[in-house]
Length: 82
Image (cartoon, rainbow, N blue to C red; front, side, top):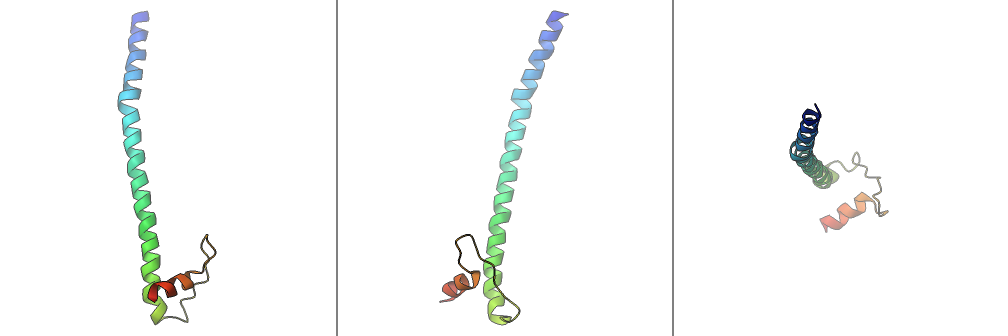
């Protein structure tokens, strides 16, 4: 009986460290890359969308949001357009 429990313990350790841990690590890396791509694409959409819509719909495109550095996005867009 004891050898059977030792065998089960060894099997659990083998399954945990050689199967579950690599699968978890790979899935974390994949999720991290997807999140990074989505965040980067969101910033790109905001930047290019702002450049497109700022000139056409200036009255409706009110950029009053401040970023973490205290600079208005409208000022950043004006710097990009120069």
